[in-house]
Amino acid sequence: MIANNLKLKPYGWYGLCLICFAEAAIVLHQMGSEIAHAICIWAIPLCMAGYLMFMDSLVYKIKGHSLIYNRRKEFCLQLLLSLIFSIILEIYNFQLKDWQYIGLPDSRMMLFIGISVTFAATMTFMMLTFEFLEALRLFDRFKVPKLKVDRRILYAAIVSGAFLLALPFFIGKDVVIDGFLYMFAGSFLFFEPIVYLRNGDSLLKDLEKGKPGRLYNLFIASLIWGFLCEFWNYWATVKWIYPASFSPEIKLFEISLFGFFGYAPLALGYFSLYNFCKLFIKNKEMDVV
Image (cartoon, rainbow, N blue to C red; front, side, top):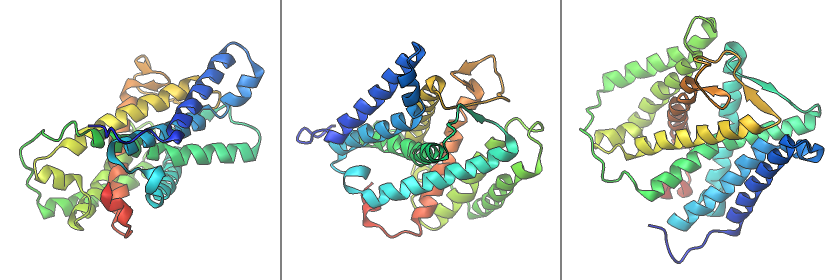
């Protein structure tokens, strides 16, 4: 499955060392080290950057090409889109107040750099994990009954998606289970039918062929992404918390178990948004994914 003639790129080992460095700083911080405290401010962006480097080198070893090594235009696109999407999430959070940040540095420059790196890396993190799972071809032989796609339903889904995307801005945060579920579902319902109708890289087309593999990989990637994000966040000095968490008695690190599984619809919505953006970009690099 892994090409024997290809080795992990050196930056992959550097990324792994970066994660170990950040984790060691967290341990030392717990023991009261002031120097480690200064490093722990950067724990989450360091871990995310290290993960991107290491995972990208694994993808290269399996496929012979990867985002960082030889698909850099696509890599830059993913970083930019991740940054924009994360800012949009923050706009929704300003209304819904699902999470808040603690331990933020006083320096505006440090704050800007830390937020920029984290926002640009987070969704790229998920997409790279998905690409790694796709390269393993674990679900290639899985089949499901072929989905019959009705265009009338697709158009209704687009309208419903637009409605759900707007809904959180017109409802109180205490009225609904979680307003972000409307946003996540709305992203998928709005963008996925458009991608399908424009003959893009659509999950619906996969299901139309009875191939659920990418959907399974996306679900697993979302859980890996969510688990690592919450794990690194739990021990970090600068972190996010969920003051209005549902089912607070059942938690995974800082997040409720119910909230943790929200990473899956978030990944689904972002995946459709990413493929929607690809409709307008002509790039040969993306054709080899």
